[in-house]
Image (cartoon, rainbow, N blue to C red; front, side):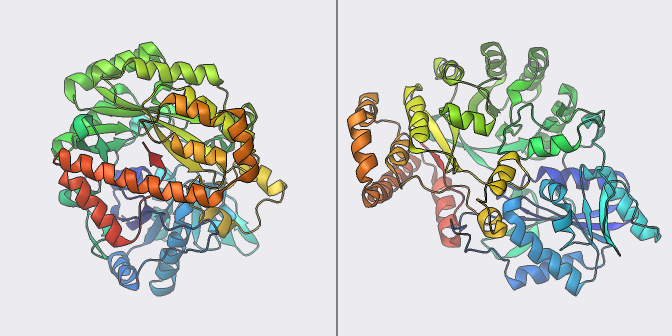
Length: 532
């Protein structure tokens, strides 16, 4: 039996599906596993990449105390948490001398870079590979020939290929939400605390519900992979690595397996008030699977249900089936209204498909909350007319809706990363990618200003039509009064904050106000961009 400590810089909600799956599988294999999550935002990231996140020395010291005596340390992280992963890894190797293995998507697509910091890198799905590595270390056996585990040899990296895909996700244990041997950084306390029920109740996302309520939601994923091939996403990058492996990269669990997980976690944590399915496109499932899921979910769980869709997978029959089960919210990726940018992004839908999906959601208003639509801006290939096409499309969608605006990030080895690299658009990767914010406020051009205005629910369509008139577009495009846009943005955010505060007071939702105050005192805001 090996003693393993898993470290994971993670977003604030503490879902951390990857390391929770690893902990569950390693425990099932007989190993002693401790999990330490480091929930934190990337809200201080700057457009020029100048801000570098680092944990306070007291947090590092506490981490080392919890990791002391382990046989192996695993570190898993998203690309935007790279600096924090490097800091933890260096501290473990230099002060404890314990070998470190990196894993996750970033390490999988960047194994050579990973070996500049860690002793090992796990490429692919790590449930079996990590267990094999830990077992070899404890047994004193060779560690340079484990499938999927790379290390550095005398002549450079030792390429041991990819850890194979898990062919049957039902064979895996549920994500480990037991709270046993689990810890988390409490940013407001500046120290690591047990990840017990009280901590989890605060960390889980609070999702909007009808009448201004916020519900504590449990997030889970029922699949691995995605049916789409978006050029900005790292899923197609990893999918391509496994092409020809004999196992489909896009796999999903059975209804029975998902329901058993939900029954277990809702019984353990009665404070869970909703379930959010974090699959990229839950609507890609066959209708018969969704019907079975809906019946079982309504019977056994019955909590409000939140999920994601894409314009090409959203369909009336699937939507109505899930509504009967308790579906109350759908968010959908639109990304752009420009045909040119759709081709660049690898998005197959057209305006008609997007409008049809939005109308399906609007027709069920009252049973569904206001939807959020995702858009991506700040691509270097996006001209003002491309962004105007997005604005024109969004202006045609039925109100109300919210917008989740994201600035393009070149995730390593994606199709858009390779294109930008070939065109000389990327010079310093750590500042231009790893430290780049997800959201840069659209306040530098007239199309960006119009996009921002669309985040407000009560501006009449006639006003948008006037603002999109050719004469005004030409005038503001020529003069481009950036200071005016910045002033309007500041005023708009002030009014939005005041409206949200008034709504919270009106509905007696003091928790929402206290959460905002806590985030403000931490001086580390959660990522902006979701508006409406």
